[in-house]
Every structure is written in structure tokens, then in C-alpha cells.
Length: 278
Image (tube, rainbow, N blue to C red):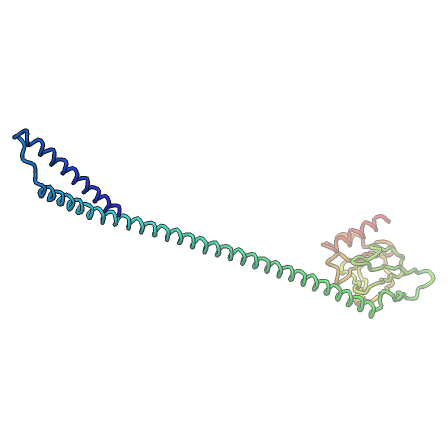
């Protein structure tokens, strides 16, 4: 629309200019013969028409070019807007995916933590139940056995003989080393889960070896002099055992040279120390 107005304005200006030129030419032609006669009004109108047509053609050429440029700009703006909207949509979708993943991870972590706590609690409950059950079974066994409450069975002794008591306490015999006279007896008590057994090679030569029944109190009389080393069979790995010295330690050198090892060697050392201190 602005181009059309510009064209009309230009045409009017051209017409006025031509008209002025014609008047001036007519005035000058009356005084000088060197100039051509001015154009007639018809010629002036024809020139004006040609100028207007030329201006229209130029405007028609420029207008499509400018219109094409405007269309291109509009298309570019739409493309930019579409790209911006697309980027915003992708960004929003990405944020939603990330937030969803974070929430899922939190839920999974919480679930794993809850399961771990449940497993720990279950294990603790099971352990507590197991301990209680074991204690109940042990108490029942001790009650049925009636070992701790029973008095030691002591063999009849002569007026000169004495009875010496060795008590099983946990995984030790108390006292560890007992010194007695020939003819005296030794009674092992509180033997609910223990026994007493002579260790071969660590008693006087020619002496009969003994092995008491498991979980029973036991009494034995010793008549031959020498050192006797014994053990608790099920707990010897923990060093449970003891020694008895009857009269004179006549087999002291034999005990020293027996080559005992481990728990047996520790018992031999205790017996030798006691014998040498006599």
C-alpha cells in the first residue's frame, strides 16, 4: 500500500515538473531561436504517462522482491519459534525423566534399606531364640543328669588313707596338680560334660591306665609312687587336664624325656615344677 502511494506522489511531482519545464521553455522560445519549440500539451501528457508506467514497472519489480524478503523473514521467525518450542519441550521431557529416575532411585534405596533392616532384625531374633533354646536344653540335660548335685562316690578308705577332690570348673581341673600319699584316693566331681583319662607314657611304668565314663563322677585309689598325668578327652584341645604326684616322683626323668607336645607338654611342665619343689 505504501508503494502505491509513493508511485502516485512521484507521478504528480513529475507532472508538475514537466508542466513547469514546458512553461519555461515557451517563455524562452519567444526570445531565442537556439532552443527547440516546447512540446505540446499532448506530448507532455504522453511523457507523463510513460514516466508513470516506468515507475509502476519498477515498483512491481521491487514489490515482489520485498514481498519475498518479508515472507522469508516470517518463515525464519516461525522456524526460530518452532525450534525454541521444540528445545523447551525436549528440556521439559528430560527434566521429567531425570526427576522420575531420582524418585525411583530413592524408592529403591529405601526399599533395600527396609529389607536389610528386616533381615538384621530377623537374624537377631533367630539368634536370641537359638540361645534361649540352647540354654533350655542345657538346663534340662543337667537336670536329668543330676551330676552337679550328687555327692562324690568315694571308695571306703582305711584309717591311714585320705580322699582328695578334684573339681571340673569350665575347662580346667582344680587343683591342677594334686600331691597325695600312696593308698590315698582322688575323686573327680562336677563331671557333667567331662571324663578323666591317663596319658600313656606319662604314668609310672607298669601302672594300669584308666579312663572314666563320660559325664560321671569318678574315684580312683593310687598305690604306686610316681607322677600321673591325665586329660579330659573331649576338651584336651583346650588344654584341660591335670597331674597327680603319689609319694616320691620316681619317674621324674621318664616324664621329662617323654617328648610330650602341645597341651600334654604344658601339663608335664606343671607336674615337673611341683615335683622339683617337693
